[in-house]
Structures are given as structure tokens and as C-alpha cells.
Length: 541
Image 1: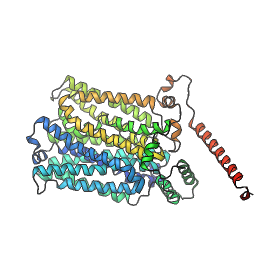
Image 2: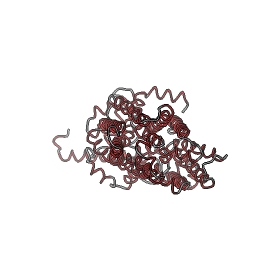
Image 3: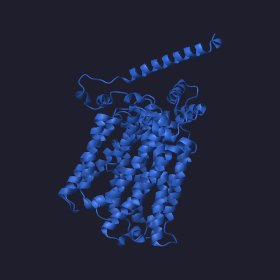
Image 4: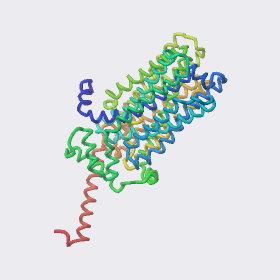
């Protein structure tokens, strides 16, 4: 898709893009905190206020891991709450509630320590980060699901990927806010409080933008509110509720929910194992979010100033400036990916290319650290710094935006809430684990940290190539056919050069499988009609 085509597409579906941007604004929460805390930890004013500058190097590493990871602990609880809350109250109201929780947590972080001792201030800071994390965990689970459920199929990947785009914007802004605070605000409490205060802005904007948006049509169908569901479908494509496309889509959603309305959360978890196809579709979102964390992205996001210092960029301001450039590179890269790659290359190729590129750059950084452990500048140091930025580009091509896109597409409609709750909980669990371990690993095994993540990225590339079918271009109600049979064959068909491994073997086309299912449904309907005629012949004319 060219630039003019992309602009025309945005104009045509401006309601859909507005909805996606409004919901994805919530992802700025996580991105903002990801970049915010790593920079604040480097400020001397923060270190002195909480007594961190008096700790040993090992104790400082533990503190850094704890203060970063407690938010992920809150995110896990938030993600676990999401399934019940969104099924009971709807996606929209749950998203607004998550914004309110985040704002309250951010306000408490901003005033931590006022009128209290150092020990009490630290406890308040820990509590507020856990509390804000509950809101972040909720929005991270809800936003991709809500957007995916509302979007037309041919822009669904791009719109769902806006979640990651907003994440990167939040991260970039927090990097530059930290840099600005370090050079423009004198050494004082306000130097580290100001970044906490500014993070209230995206929370307020998120709530204001979400208020006028409609509810998810698939949740409305589940509640048997069909007229409202048709209204949402018509709104996102800017047409009337009587349009044939709207009515056809509504019928497809209703058919997918037949016999599955108002399923309790406990029942949804049980139904995740109802068939081989359902098990595969419920596992893949969790595998994707597990792998996303083991790319090592949060190791760089949270501790990039320390990593740049190890590569020779010294000084607090210089490290924060280099980190700010890293955030800018990520925003540009993910923006270009969503505009031109995700709907043309497809999900699978983006993930594969991203994994290979991330693996190679991580292995280079680890290898350089092994050969040159000193922080002095040598020519290869510049290559390593460029490798960090290239890592960001490859992450944004694949494992940044695409796991959320594929997870929201693959999850079965009738157990979507439970499936995505598990997937997001896995994401936060390993985000917690990695953010807690990274400062310790950087201190203990140094370059081995990057080698570990590099090997993990190569494993992801292999898994994507052999085991993940392409989902681009399919309606959510048709994706089930991709996992009905011949999953590995279909995956290799979709992989670059994959048909070499297949010989003449091919997977059954989805169109044929859908046609067979339609014939079976028609046959069942006729049989049901005959049975009704036999049971009540006096009512048949």
C-alpha cells in the first residue's frame, strides 16, 4: 500500500481509526512507565531522596529490580481481573475503569514522601506502583481485544497494532521527559516528581477519548443486544445499520455464538480444552506473549541508560539522550510497519524477520561485551550502539506490535476473554521476571544477558516459521479453519521458501473448509425443520 492509498484508507475508515487510537491511548500507560522508571533511577536527586546512593552496588541492583518489577506484579492482578470484569460490564466500561485506577496510582506516586519519613515514602512508592499496575494490566488485556472485535478485517492488523505504537510513543515521551528533567530542573525533589506528574496527562486523555466510543459488537451479541451491535458495526465502517455488509457480519458473529451465550468465566476456562483446534488457538496467544518478553526488549527499555553506559556513553544526561533517540527510533519503525508492512507482508513474515534481526543484533552486542568488557570507546563500540538501535527497528517490525495482533485474531470468540486474560497474565508474569532479573544479570553475567536473549530470538524465528499459520485477510469467524487440520503444512505454505519442505503436499484451502461447513449447517437446518414438521403436523401448511 502506497502513501496516498494509506491516507485514503484512513479517511474512508476514520471512525474505525479514531476508535482504535482512543483505545490504544491506554497503552501509553505501560510505555510511559517502562521508559520513565529506568530514567528516574539514574537521577541523583531520586537516589539521594530514597537513600539509594548509600547502598552497595549489589543492593542497588536489587532495589532497581524491585522498584521496576512491582508494577508488573500489579499488572498480573489487573490482567487476571480483566476476564470477569469485561465479560460482566463490557469492554468499554472496563477500559475506562482501568484509566481511573491508573490515574489514582500515578497521583500517589507523584506525592510519595511528602510529610513522611524516608522509609514510609518508599513503602508508599511501592504501593502506588502496584496500584497503578492493576490499571495497566487491565488495559493491556482489554485494548487489543476491544480493537480487534470492532475492526473491519482488512485494517484489523494495522489498527490492533496501534496498541504497540502507542506503547512506543509513551516510552519515547517518557525518555525525553526524563532527559528534560535532568538538564532543565535543578537538583531537587521536583526533578524526579515532575515525570511522575506528567504521566497523569495520558490517563486523563484516554478516559476523555473513550467516553464517546461504542461498545464491542461481539460483546453486545453475547448479551443479545443485536441492534446496538449493528450500530457499532455500522459506525466503524461509516454506513447504515441496514447495509448488507453490516447484516452479514452480524449474522456471522451471531452464528459463532450459537449455544455459547453468557458463558461464565469458569466455564470459559473449561471450554479452552474442548477440542484440539480450540487448545491450539488458546495456547498460541500465551506462547506469543511469552516469547515477546524473552526478546529482551524490556531489559533495554528499563535499563537502557545503564546499557549505553556500558557501551561507552557516560554521564546521566548523555545516557538519557541516547535513550531518547532509542525511543524515537522505535516510534518511527513501528509506525512504518503498521502503515506499510503488517497488511502487505503479513503477520508471519513480520514476526520471522523481526526475530532473526533481533537475534543477530543481540548476539553482536553480547559478543562485543565478551571481547571488550571495558566501557572505553573503541571503533566497535559505535557498531554496538548502532546494533541497539537496529534491535529496536527489528523489534518494531515483528515482536513489538504483532503478538497482540495475532493473539487477538487467533483467540476463539466464545472463550476470548479467558484466552486473552491468560495470555496477558503470562506477558506480565515474565515482564515481572525479566525486569526483576535484568539488573542482577547485567551485574553478574554481563554480556551473557544479551547472548541469552539472542538465542531466544532465534528459537522464536524457528517456531514462527514452522508452527504459525498466516492470519492476514481472514474474518475472525474463519480463523478457526486455519487450525482445524494440517497446521504445520499450512504454516510452511505461508513461510518464505517453506514449500521446499512439503514436496507436493498442500493444506485444504479455507474456502473449501468453509463451504463444507456451510453445507453441513444447511443439512442440519433441513433435518431440524423436518423433525419439527413431524412433531407438529397440524401447524404445517
